[in-house]
Length: 81
Image: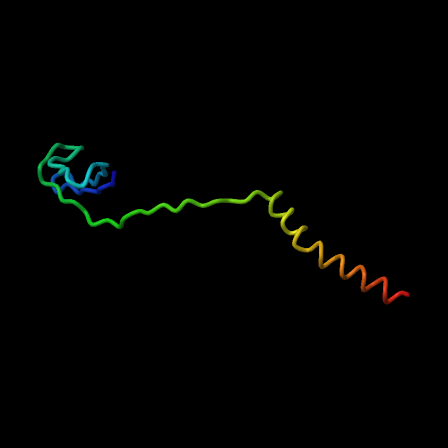
C-alpha cells in the first residue's frame, strides 16, 4: 500500500497514512478536522541489494589471480636459469 502525507489546515500538523489508491482520507488523525489536503509526494521505490560476503569476494579474487601468479612464477624461474 502506498503512503500518503496529509496536512491539516486547522491544527497545522502533517500526518502520514498507508492506504489504497482508491481510498480517501476525510479527517485529520490529530484533531479530526475535515480541512485536510493531500501533499504531493515522491513515490518510494526500494531496490533489493544483494551483498556478497567478504569470504566469497576473497575467494573469487584468489581464483581470478591464480593463473596470473602461476605465469609470473614460471617467468621468474626461467629468468634465474
